[in-house]
Length: 212
Image 1 (cartoon, one colour):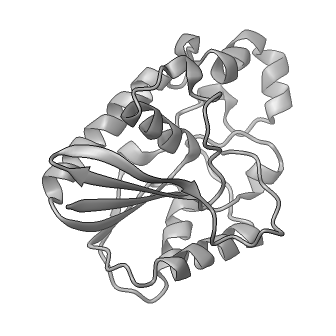
Image 2: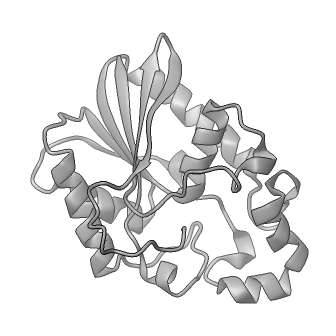
């Protein structure tokens, strides 16, 4: 059986500033680094065959902090990038909502209607995500792998596995906190959710952060 450990990158400076990141990047905060190390400690006894990471620096840094001195192949996977926001990237959410009111509303409230002239829609994200997981299943029939990626990627995967309508993407739990842990097992070529967005490794004193 193949077991997939899936996590979101640690908190970043743009998360704090309420800026959309997408394919752009910003450094991890000290809190983000701490949470990554704590998740690594939680998973210290798992012998990962491979670590797959989005090429975003925030994901790569999270993966490296989790693994510390452990030796394991690292694979940078383009299909694990966050959804591409196009012209929105690097902009504050409030500014985007004012300049693109309908598109921004659709992103959060009617994702099945969301379109982007310079970025991706959710259907395009889903296609590259499903392509990656088909490749993953062909490469790993058994063992454990770690995937470090992004909020919308994880939400999209969970929704797809649950056969959840896209329009309910954001209205249905879970909330994807930084370094939250999701576990998926591949049983007879089918992906089954074992654990969703668990943050038991994070100190309860830490307040939740805004997604992405």
